[in-house]
Image (tube, rainbow, N blue to C red; front, side, top):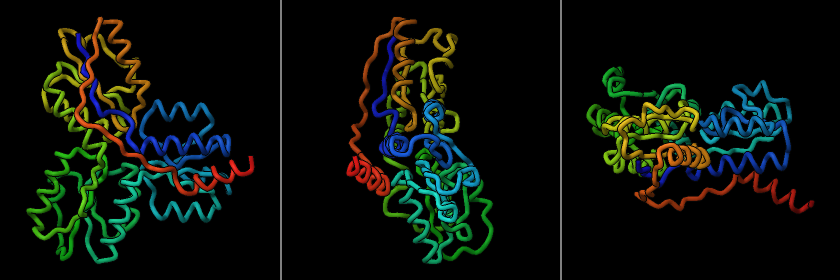
Amino acid sequence: MKILLANPRGFCAGVNMAIESLERSLEIFGAPLYVYHEIVHNKYVVDRFRREGVVFVESLEEVPVGSPLLYSAHGVSPQIREQARTRKLQAIDATCPLVTKVHLEAIKYAKEGYTIFLIGHEGHDEVIGTMGEAPERMILVETVADVDRLEGNFEKVAYLTQTTLSVDDANMIIGALRQRFPHINNPPKDDICYATQNRQDAVRQLAPQADLVLVLGSQNSSNSKRLQEIADSLGPHSHLIDGVSELDAAWFEGVQTVLITAGASAPEQVVQEVIEFIEKTYNATVEDAFVRQESVHFPLPRELRTLIAQSQGSA
């Protein structure tokens, strides 16, 4: 058996920044440390931080007044920021800069009087935060059918997208919007993030060479689910798993080549555990498959860099 190991895979720059922000904040504040929503959508990462004393909350009412608080990589609405100020929380904003870009685009289009169609998944943390920037001017569209059902006279229209969508799915919806609104406006650069695109491109290129595709990632991770769906559409059996404990021997019957990749919030440790298990169990060999190199890096949030400098100065 051969393992094709997709490159790029796993952590993106935004996830690296968010996780390092939480690690450094723990060093400065100690436990308990509060995070609004899961820091990233990955069970392994969230469980690890829970063990270290991090408390993930769905309401700021759960956070004691004056406490330190991190915003997750998926971003938050202005209403949440205002609530944090009211409760005098010491907020550190670990929002991915690519998500912040979409928020700024939403604000700009709303100020200019546009109706904004946000292409995304209802209930996703990122979508909730983005729609909070201009709820009265924004309409969520999840499918081409949603576009067909739009009613009303829209004079100035624009679209934005959730950063972790399938490029193919987003393009279908964008096509439907363009057909309905030929003069629809859009940002100069795509909103779907570089890491999402790169991991999807790698799966598209490599999946046809495999009999089985394993995507490391959690079920609530949008970008991980898209990888599994793309692999499924290309023919090989594919499974989205959190780790080695979810592997099923039946999946490997008659399999000669396994493609392994990981969503942007899945740690490399879980990838290596799966590889080691397959090597040991099936005497498999590993072949690295490079589709694209990545060198993107995001700095820590400014407020955290200030705290780090202050702590080093007083040490």
